[in-house]
Image (cartoon, rainbow, N blue to C red; front, side, top):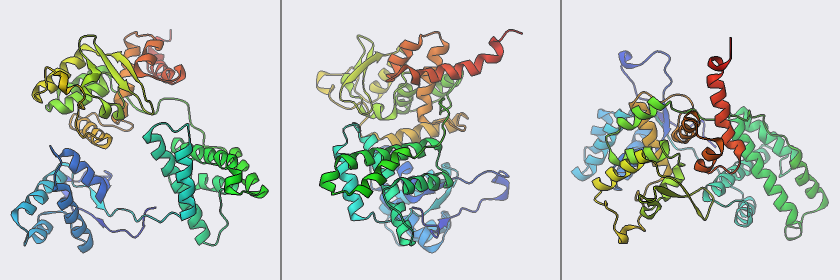
Length: 404
């Protein structure tokens, strides 16, 4: 939970450069350091030195500027000054956002932690690491809430009443209906697992009834529709044409031309790129087998340009096991996408890295590709998921298609 008393470094901007009513972007120390690391061409100790500088600014309530830089680096050797100078340039390119201390983490009760670990380890429906991380985060949040309630002298436990109160707590704290329902789903599955483990956990009748009550807790209403914005065809063309880095362009092409998820991009190996048969072999989220999708000509060309620039084209047999992008993380992909969308004036509410996947589905439908083929290309489990794109297309063309 966020510590309300945590300090923040507020950058004083000239009045002429501050747009009236414009919201100030805020990042925690860890967030901005992750973005800084993603912007560097290779891994180094630069992020560590930059973090030390930020913590120094927070401790002394200094702004992140030339004056604090001069104070901090006064007695440092040149090899430690360079990382701070590079970070300052990066910080200015980010628009000099507010930087806050990382929130203090409350300690999870030992019993709750052991229960969560056992459940995550034994839950057969949680196939991917991302799903396990999401459920762990949700359950940690709940038991921290329970602990805080108990510390305040209130009654709280793994029961229907407390879970219902937790749902309202999340809603009051600005969590989206989608996120609240994911957290609730995790708690309901934990309750089912606990009931099955009644004997090892030595649960009595009252505890079992409290667990069963959790199934009756209702989530928040969510409109079954698309959640992300998407680019128009000319916007996608503008985005790809304006990227100068072959690596960044290759990443954007896989997202915006092929419709891959960010985690799928990080998993790609050179052997997954079949230029002869024009196929990409994708290891989807939470899966152990790969699926083949169409490797579009535009994407093949961009991949060849990237591999040529990296000295890996043509691909040799001994290279096939290598990752397409070495040491690439999903948060780095999100940063690259946000950076390019901002630079090209395409960043807007609801636009993110996942929006490029939505862009592919939307544009394929608008080009006349059948719903079933779009489903197969995006590898949706159900046709209902793909139909979200149809609903968006219908809303978009409704006024033009309806007869007067």
